[in-house]
Length: 122
Image (cartoon, rainbow, N blue to C red; front, side, top):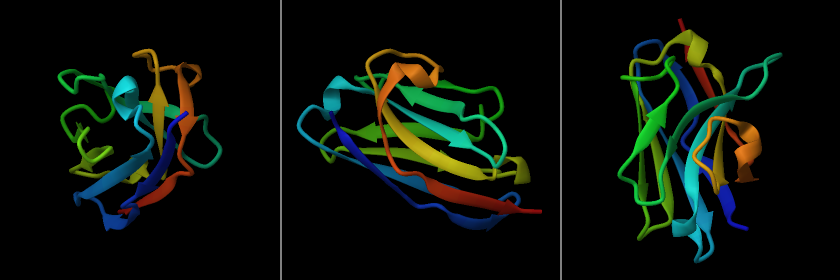
C-alpha cells in the first residue's frame, strides 16, 4: 500500500487560504484515487474531496465546493488541496487518503496519512 504524509496545516484567519500537501511513497501512486477527509473534535470523519487517477475529474463536498481545489502531480507523487475563503467551521484535522473506488465513504480508502491540523480563527 502507499504511504501518505500530509503537511501545510496551520492557523489562519477567516477568509484566508492554506495549501495542504500530501506526499505519497511507492511506485503505485498513479493506481489510486486520492482523497481528503477531515475530522473536527467530537465529530465523525467527513469527506472533503477526491480526484481520479487521471486527475481529470474531481468531486467536492457541498460545504467546500467553490472554495477548495484538489489537484495531483503524478510525477512528484503529490496531492494538493488549495483551501480559500476559509471559515471557522473548516477547523479540523485533515487527512489524505488513497483509495481504489471513487467514493465519499471512508471505507473506500485503504491508506491514510497521520493528519494535519487546520485551525481557522474568526
